[in-house]
Length: 277
Image (cartoon, rainbow, N blue to C red; front, side):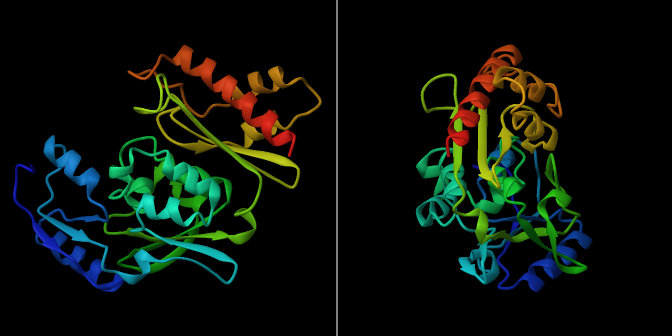
């Protein structure tokens, strides 16, 4: 149960959603956008957030699209992770989405919610980073389309009043050889120690990571090290580890030292698997 009252709005268009946000913001109601609402409920129950109004984006047609159009895969922010996995239009993304939470939760968690959420795993972004996807964002200045690497820097950098509408991914990435590993301490339950997504394009391996640091990331320097076939794989991995963008996580799932051990093993698995393809 959420321990406070708030107003609920469900606009039918992108423009109306933005206009309502601005109006509610001026009224001091600290509005929040949402698609599935799972994180809002979680944070509100712990009194971490106190929105006076919420704006439900699920009635906006552009936020519910999932199709290939003009050689681009378009995914709306309100598509659930379950629907994303079932459609399987981008197998690497489907696998990443399927690894997030359990089936019941995935029926509610939206693609946009996973990308924009506060929980630092946000694994659905990994394939988008690898595929150089583009992001469609709506705000008071209108609708803009930008490369994901311009706006996803540790998290999706949205201005106040902006929301994620869609993502575009070039069709050429959808059928590339890929691997996806999610390593947990025990079985298939709980948050991961390490998640690695990787694909092979133009004879080079490209990797992205979640659970390693306090944010998901892709690193050009790490990929450069892993693709340096002039030295043994063990040395490549050591060099790659040196280019981590932040300290290794140390939390209830595992120590930084153990996480490093698992990361090295997983990097080796990914490189071995994709070098053979």
